[in-house]
Length: 463
Image 1 (cartoon, rainbow, N blue to C red):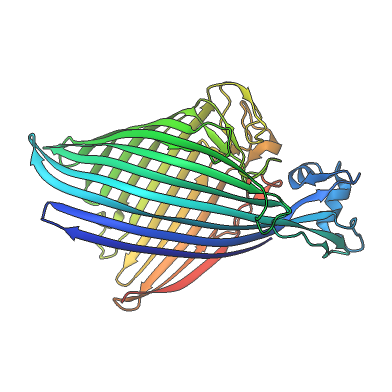
Image 2: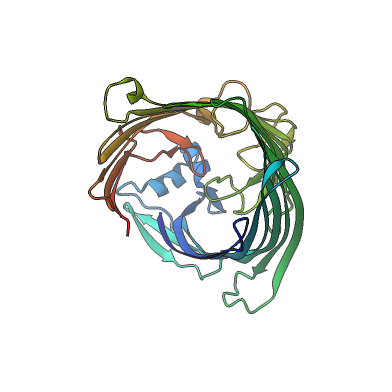
């Protein structure tokens, strides 16, 4: 694979303080991205009647021995001419808009208020102009046999325009704080397809449009039992709009959380329960999901419920040691259970044939992160352990079959920093310190490895 990316971000912010209580903040932004991801897409089958996906080849190399030999490139062997199809995923993106937020602080009805009202206009675009090149494997080397014309594989533009408005008030009565709010979005989506033989985009085109309007309420609350303990809870509406030209429904959900927080001196604790109740889960085919589907296609997953618990604890161990050093330690544990609430058959490979009660794919039941640090004067270092439980590669129930099991893993990361001056710092980190080998998925093409040991070092300047 070869991935080349160029990205620009522009942002301008303006703020007016009319009074101590009334202010207006406006942000204008634009991002521009060009990227070309050049990668092997599939292999011409032995019968020369079509192409076989990399997933199918790597799942069953015995059946697809000819195709497997073509991608392995054994010395002394050659594939058929043009057997390897390499795709130039050439795309350009932009997103631009302006948002203004009016803030007003006041006292009324026996409470303190921090009121916000906002309006935003946003538009974005994805321009796909892709082609396929054909290669032959000759004695372990890939040789170009035919180059595809620009736009001959995919030639389309997806665009969106949206207006968003929200009102939110942070209300404080003594020890109780509530933050109710509501958001309204109106989104117009357009997909324009051009002929694959029309790189200049001068000829006929097909246009698909759809529009979405949605109201998203929510509220978060906090109650201070005393100086150390507080209760927290929240309910919010979740939403993801369908893509332009998609036949899928929008993703909609209600999200609930409730828990307790404790903080005293050098220690803190938090315990939270959460529930995400999907009325419809949306699945999207991407290059990373794979699944013999067209990139951008979307699928309805029906009703889904995800619930779980999360515990967070942090403490500075130097509080009980006679030392000027800081010894921060922390732990985060998450238990998650997600299951489909309806039965259906889907051509989206991650789901497949789903029975009510099947577990969601790619959702580990247990996750644990432990962190220990040492800070003294101008330097600091941290060691982090991250454990992720096994997970399914495809929806199902019962014991996970070996060929469908994403194994559990424990990864260690190490980082350190040193302040040379008050304005200059050196930093370095090592991810996957032990260079552990592990798989993170079986798509888009067979078992996918996790990142190997990687190093990062640099300098930070403040001026």
